[in-house]
Length: 115
Image 1 (tube, rainbow, N blue to C red):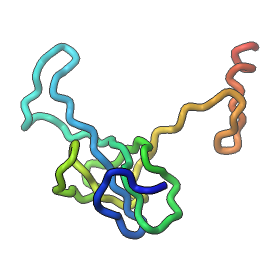
Image 2 (image 1 turned 30 degrees about the vertical axis):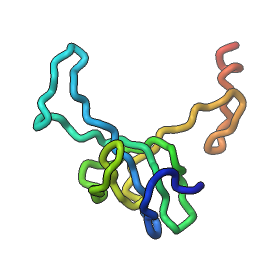
Image 3 (image 1 turned 90 degrees about the vertical axis):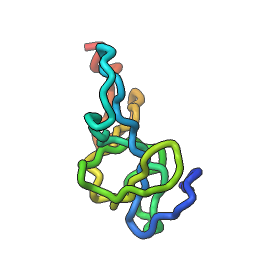
């Protein structure tokens, strides 16, 4: 899949992630000061490197550790990180449809509910 709306092309097994914005207000309505906000450890994959054998795809949501990647200082909707695919901790699984196979196991939700 081609990199969408990102001006840099990562090289090799590197990927670019758009980090989620930090939480600015708590559920109770308390405003969190900028210095106290924690950087989110989740984001959206926006570009893939030239290696071509990735197990992730553009648009997937991914989790990474707080010390992984290098921050890019480019203009955009948020903070971009460049990291290797191996630095990802996990990706959000796609929604499963009834009767589809995922990792060799049949997902038969409708049949399981009927029992």
